[in-house]
Image 1: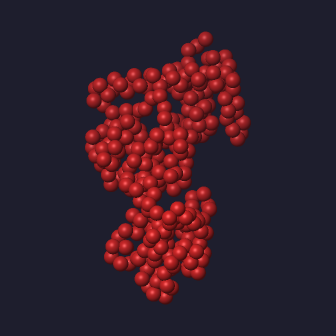
Image 2 (image 1 turned 90 degrees about the vertical axis):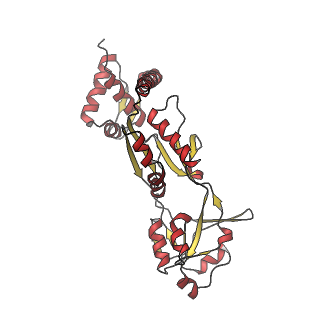
Image 3 (image 1 turned 60 degrees about the horizontal axis):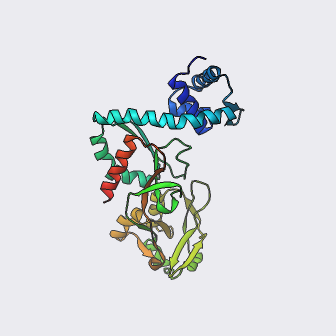
Length: 297
C-alpha cells in the first residue's frame, strides 16, 4: 500500500468535518478539484471508499468513520507537538477565525485586537461580523462572540464585556406628540421601529419586571435590520425603538433620545467569547483567550 501524505489525510478530515467539498476547499485554500483528487488518492491508497458523495451531500462510509476516529487524536497530538515547539521558540503563528455580531467585533477591535496583533505579529486574525447565529464548528471558526444568552450550552464561554440591557427609546419630538407608554402593552398604540433578524423573523420585544415576563410583536410601519439605523430612525422621530443600550448611549447622553419603560428593561448577560471544548487548543486561540480574560478583568 502506498502511504498517503499528510496533506491527503488533512484533506479527508476537512471534508469529513464539514460534510462539504466546497466548504472544505475554501477553508484549505485549494480548488475543489484538487481536494477531490486528494481524497480519491487517499481512498486508492487505503483500498476503501471513505465518503459517500451525491450532488447534494457528503457522508462518511463505515470505513471513513473508523479512519476519522483514529486520525482525530493523532492529528491533535501532532498539531500540539508542532505548536509546543513553536511556542518554545517564542513564535505563535497561524490564522484565528472569529465570528460575531457587528457590536461584538467592534468591541474586540477596541479592546483586545490592537494589543494582540502587536504582541503576536505571526498570527492573522480573520474577524467576520455576521448577525446570524452560525454553528462556529461547522463553519470553520475557532471562536465566536455573542450575548451570554445566545452562547450554545456545549461551548466554553469567557466574559468579554459587562452585563448590558436593551432599552426602549424615543425622541423628545415623538414623545411630545405621543405620550410615553407606561406598560409594554401600551406599545400597541404606538409607532414602533421593528427589527428584522438575520433569520428573516421580526424580533419580539422582551420585557421583565418583578419576574413578570412580556414578549410583544410590536406594531410599526418601519422595519430595519441594523441597530445603528434603528437608533437613527428613532432620533428622527419615526417611533419607539428597542436596542442594546451601547447603540443609544451617545444619543441618550445629549438628549436626542429619551428612555421609556425603563423599569421594564432588565439587565442581561453581556458579550462572551466562546469556543468548543476540545482535547487540543491552538496556541493562538489560547493566547487570544488569555488576553480577553486580562482585558475583562
